[in-house]
Image 1 (cartoon, rainbow, N blue to C red):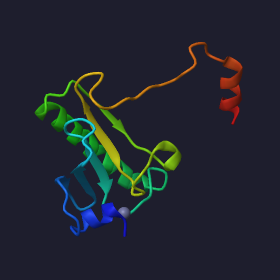
Image 2: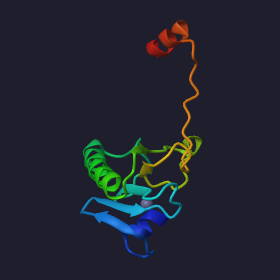
Image 3: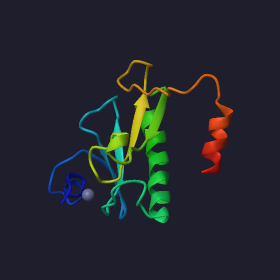
Length: 131
Ligand SMILES: [Zn+2]
């Protein structure tokens, strides 16, 4: 059984901040920023790629509700909501979870950089579009 399933089954203690029949949310032990939260389905799915759409809708609704609450209660200036799917994307626990990372300043613990091409390559974009 994976570590998140054990937390959901209350076999391992965690700071659970929300729970209903399908969804569970805990404070991440790493606390990248203050209030860093993980929202996950109670059933084990590996990532967003194999989570059933109806359940995913419920998880994202809970994520929105908690994001609003966390931003307001912790006086955050903003929030990043993200999920990593598979190792190549940085997923470390193979139980689907969405990160809520409240933001306070630009150098508050999360480094998120989009290294895009400043000059759009139209031919390349058309090739990708065809795929
Ligand atoms: Zn699991």
